[in-house]
Amino acid sequence: VQLQASGGGLVQAGGSLRLACEASGRTFMTYAMAWFRQAPGKKREFVAAVTWSRGATYYTDSVKGRFTISKDDAKNTVYLQMNSLKPEDTALYYCAADRESGQKRLRAGPNDYDSWGQGTLVTVSS
Image 1 (tube, rainbow, N blue to C red):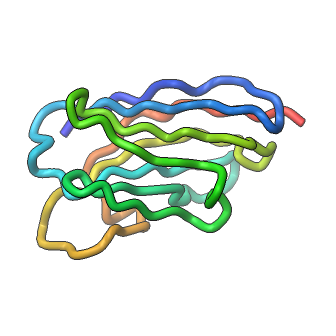
Image 2: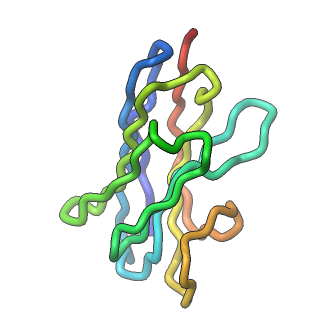
Image 3: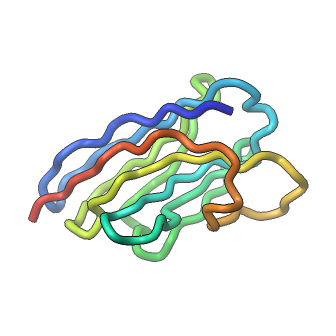
């Protein structure tokens, strides 16, 4: 699966952005799609995930109620709607795909994901 991320930018605190990740290739082999982020000097961390077939979702606690992950099956695209942005949300955001291999639940570890898109930078000013 090949992934193309877009939608990053500069926004003031309290503002909103929507990231998009278009998947191509063998998408039928995908169990889930996720967004991770990595701030300067920090480890890559899980943000949100959605199952490819049923649309079940999972969020890290720090973004619950502010971020929404969704998918458009017709466009093979996963979105991350980010509202009420905070300066601590500033990071490179990556989309990733977890290949179907019999897993029963969404996963949050970077090593669980097989394909990665390029990062898109989100900067939130105070």
